[in-house]
Image (cartoon, rainbow, N blue to C red; front, side, top):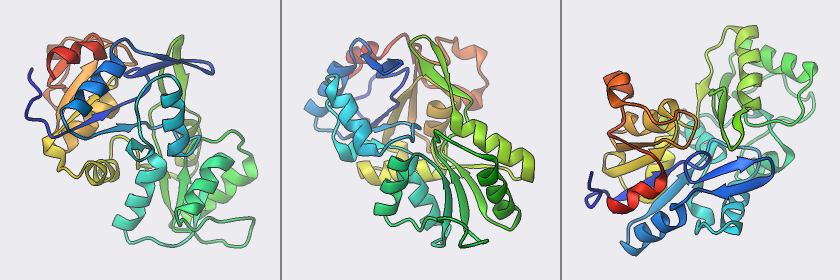
Length: 269
């Protein structure tokens, strides 16, 4: 596959550019070189992770610390795309959050109206990001808000993502599943894959989704995001899905190409 005509690139993080082993981040072979070659071509790139435990700038700083050239504005997460979803839906009311304190502070800085304490029984949405601590009182309050009409939003509903020593389970998905079970509501994903994520990517790169290439390790998130927007999709075999034969996937879920690792893209750029 040639990628000369692609106008912008979207990369996943865990399982694609890096692997995490606890607090350690290990860069995948060829990842830094691929980003450098794209920059040398003058084309824009973005990094989209469904991680939501810290502000996007903190994610970018962590990648720079291990040698990946990523600017703050290029790092996209559900903390950014949830704002697009709320604007797309015309919602500007308060939101009940399940999030870390850092994520909470970021969203407030970005203008989100966040519920505190017990001051309101109404909200436009309940948004589940990554949460370190959750109690039953908070879950019950959120469930009552959803039953009262609040949207149930989640950064990701995938059960796990790729780690160096096996899958890392998603706490956000666990909390979302509990609320969905209690209320019967169908969660709305605002991270990958979603229209809100596509809008966030397109705005960041200044390019329509159909002119992009989306590269990641997860058929259900990265490939699904690209196919949703008509982008070119490339599955890397170093993550959660692994290397699969294209004919083992339905046409709707099939990427345009499968590579063993991110370094294989160097021959296509």
